[in-house]
Length: 178
Image (cartoon, rainbow, N blue to C red; front, side, top):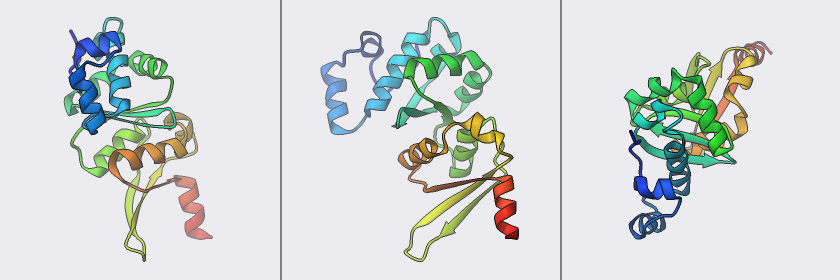
């Protein structure tokens, strides 16, 4: 079974874009990250059957880290197989976050921080009219599970245009009482 992708499956298998997909890339309808993620998914579909059943909607890359937006029903399929994550990260040579497509911002952030729990999500409106979204996650171990917060912030900004502030539960408690 082949995954459903933003580019032709033939292009993903060969690694060379056809004229149609190349034109879509130039017009900005698809991104280079979507091309790379599509090639990785097709390459892994034989070894990891769960990846052959997914639908990749969009992909974003920031500093070698990827956010892959899959159909909502495909997210648990990939999460249930830790080998799928490891294989994807190996194929893309970077950290990978799997999120559900079309979800609200809070659900998107919960998907990005998975398996860590998101304790709170608050929006802070700035005097200049901008806004930042503050996420509080439990304990310090979250950073090891989630990966580099700087790359995560950049990937989230690219994917959803959310300026992200991340604090652990301890940091939030210390700042509240200091």
